[in-house]
Length: 158
Image 1 (tube, rainbow, N blue to C red):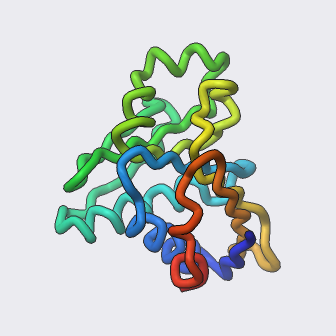
Image 2: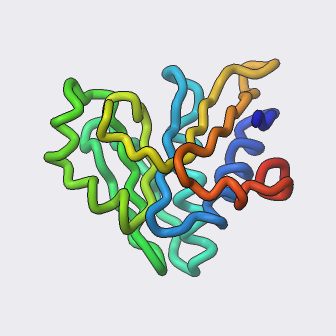
C-alpha cells in the first residue's frame, strides 16, 4: 500500500499516527535514499509518542554517529537506530539491539545493513520522492506476523 505525503507536515502526521498504534516488539524499518526524510519521520514518531504518553518532547538528534539513541516511554523504550555507518551486520550485535526487537519499539534507518539479523516481523516504510521537492510516497509493507490489521484507513490516511 502507498501513502501520498504532500509535505513535511504530512510526513510528521503519518509518523504520529503510527506512533499511536506502536506496541512493544514493533520494528519499523525506514528505507530510502539520503534526504528522503527517514530521520524526520523518526523524530516525529518519537515526539508524538512522548506527547501521547504525557512525557516532555525533547530534541531528537540523528543517531548517525552514536548509531543508537533511546527514548523511554510509558510502556516501552523507543530505539532510534541508524545503521548507515555499519560495515557488517555482525557489528549490530555489539549495539545490544536484539533485546529491543523483542521488548521495545525500534525505528531502524538503513535496515538493509542488518542482513539476516533484521527481524522478519516488521513494518517496512519506504520513502520515495513525490510530485514536489517536499512530497514523498510512503510504501508500507507489513512483513512476517507484524500486525497489518492495525493499518486501517485512519492510520494510513488520517
